[in-house]
Image (cartoon, rainbow, N blue to C red; front, top):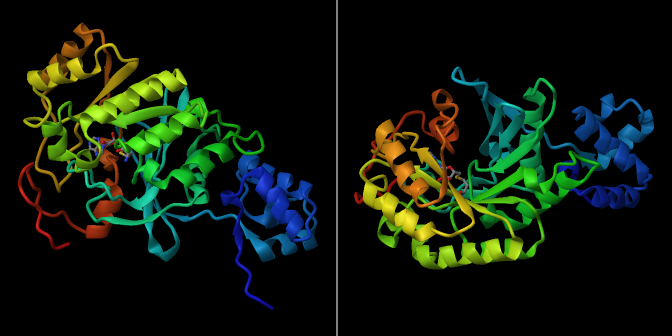
Amino acid sequence: MTMQTIINILDQTPDELRKKFSGSGIEAYRADQVLGWIYGKGVYEFDRMTNLPMDLKKKISESFLVGMPAVTQAQRSDDDKSTKLLLKLKNDDLVEAVYMPIKDRETVCVSSQVGCKFHCAFCASGQDGFFRNLTAGEIIAQILHARDLSPAKRITNVVFMGIGEPFDNYTALLKTIRILNSPKTLGLGARRMTVSTCGIIPKIQKFAEEGIQAELSVSLHGATDRVRGLIMPVNTAFPVKPLITACKAYIKKTGRAITFEYILIKGVNAGPKDAGDLAKLLRGMVCKVNLIPMNAIPEFDHAAPTYQETVQFQQVLQTQGIKTTVRFSKGRDIQAACGQLRSVKLKGQAKKGVKVGEHRSASR
Ligand code: SAH
């Protein structure tokens, strides 16, 4: 007998699962029953799926599994009610997910990759490089783990703002959105999902063509190539002007607004001139700006501006008619900035921080 690979049910669309059940000699409607247990009731063990006959449970478990990775750490914030989960995947790969109940929303922030290729200076996720893409099932497992933390056992919003670059794992990203959309899973509308990108232009163009109603956030963090290039190496491949052109085309094609994420880093991108440059760049666009006072990480020797400087920055944009909110980060006390928990776990202790313009030593 040949070794058969076991199929992760969380990687399958409902249609695919029906086909695969049929292919294994299991009646297709059983696929819907299993999905009902997983997505409807939060039951992940076949043994506990009480409307399945015993011999069928055995047969299913020979070819299928529900890939729920172990939670190795769960840190609940004292500031708010957010909880950060550290999940252990196969080969001991670690990823993070954050469950954030905010007013009437229950949001989960998911990782899309193990590590990241893009090395933004202020971000903990890419400091140790890139390891691999997550599968759709590995992304969905994060959402299910977060939902299990919810008192009402529900998730209303998903944001792809954890570790990794979702547009660099495009196929799994789209599959995840499509699986979650289905009424046989969570029935989560695309409008309740936000994809955040560091600005991969060809994928912004492609995403505009998909006819998906998801929200798009673009991490801008600098309004000129000089400033953005200092902190985001991806700016060399995809500089500010063509990025904004692609964003404008996206807005035109989809009829949807874009949110620009802009981390405020004192002495780097947070002065009055920076605010003026940003206002000039975005004036007239159907967009809004999310200002995020930087979360300090040990690897990057910079801080957020003062409250007053932050408000002044916001006012420059607002007086130009640009909708601007300030997002004071949630869960600072649980190291909820991207990739921080995983990074601390990997290193055991912090490295010396570097300043913009300094060179990081080549050795890891
Ligand atoms: N790769 C995607 C998604 C992951 S980052 C992207 O770049 O958008 C999600 C958001 O968290 C981005 O806007 C990112 O710039 C921000 N972020 C990363 N490190 C941060 C820090 N130290 N403080 C505040 N926000 C941070």
